Image 1 (cartoon, rainbow, N blue to C red):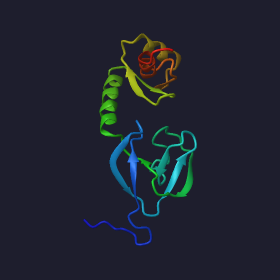
Image 2 (image 1 turned 45 degrees about the vertical axis):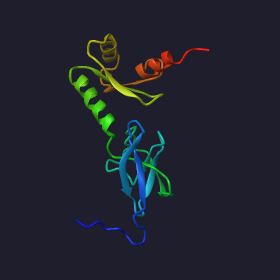
Image 3 (image 1 turned 90 degrees about the vertical axis):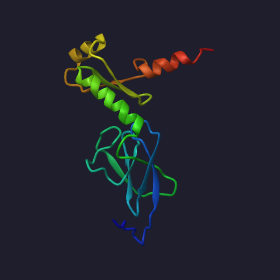
Image 4 (image 1 turned 180 degrees about the vertical axis):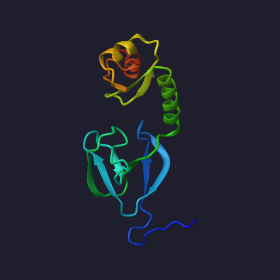
Length: 153
């Protein structure tokens, strides 16, 4: 199948990064003259307006048109990288068994507490309709484990 490359803009390839961990991916985008959009809430850079009109990172719908991209800019890939996809599958398996999804607002990590964790019942009593617990560093398992690794002065 032939690939159409517009003469006016050319290939104009750009590297991508994982929208979940922000690490590099093996995808290259053919941008041509496509505009870039920035999420006003979290600052995530998107190639074109997402199909849903929502940010792939935070889910808000406040995207600002920034015009055409410049050389060297990287964009969020539509899909998470392989390791993040694997972790997301594990999180979904825990949630299917009654666990609670969490995401840290400070470090960006995510996971799920199992349904045997007492914090899950307490959270659901206080916030029955919340699908995810947005943690801060003092409650985040990843931030807490990093804090233990760093010796205090």
